[in-house]
Length: 141
Image (cartoon, rainbow, N blue to C red; front, side, top):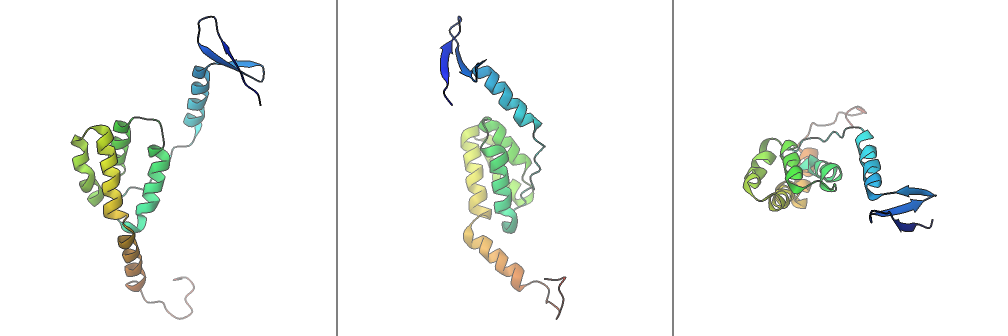
């Protein structure tokens, strides 16, 4: 679909799409309205359990990490989404410059709780140390 660029009498850039004029501010406003109309995202808190880490991390990145908000806001959200051991691990990042603190917090969480060996070890432990299955017990499966 062709787009023609035109300039208004004030020198601001406008686009004509399907015969209608659109300014960048209008596009931003429409995007904001779309985002605000989405349902609230519920993210499971990270408590340091390796079995749940990648679910948490992916959800957090999709909801916060890939947005255009500043790193200070992302870091504050990350603090909000962490509990227990995970919160304790990233707590020192609060005194860092926001961009550095946010990146460091992500790296600490991935290293401590998303390590492939640690995750696989936790799954093996859950499977081998769980309750014994009774014969013909479909519910326990």
